Length: 270
Image (cartoon, rainbow, N blue to C red):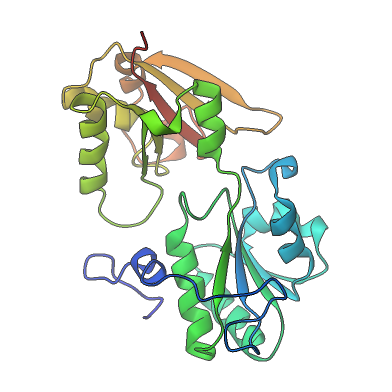
């Protein structure tokens, strides 16, 4: 799979990452072949390091080389002596290629992502796995779950996960099917909703507008949970109709919210 992927023709890296279960890897850190140390993909939590799990911290601390988006690596750089490979979207391919080469040469490697990769992050996991496998097909990748901002939002909004539909829009590619699932959850199924918006073309206001236009009750309670667990955490409270007033635009100047937000939409509870 090439990192220069086309999401319209596939394969999506998230699909690649989910293509097979993980191989058996014991806690001594060896793959099922008994000789290859796994690469770890660690969810670092929502940003406040009190929510970084001990297992994730150990994988970060023991790594020789650490790779991730700059904003993520900055959260954990004081917890490791590893060489840090930071990147953005434009230089992600180069950073992952260097990371994979160093892992293939025998260094222990850990990739870091915000929150929990199992909630939103499989595209990154897929890119890491693809890069590593191109250098050494025997190197397994193991995901270490983190605390997701979705779990914090569910707590703040009191939306039990078993009664809640979760949809992530925080990914590349077409979102039509995801948006339809959002609308069905709120209208046909009467479920609470937790959504991760996509900066900045599918922000909370855009989602609210879409839901109202597709039959959602405009009076439903909508909470925009921003910068959860950070010192400047805020919970913005609206009706869906009020929130839809913030729809439109594709830039930071077009929305009152940052990119660290979760949208919770609550159904009435008897």
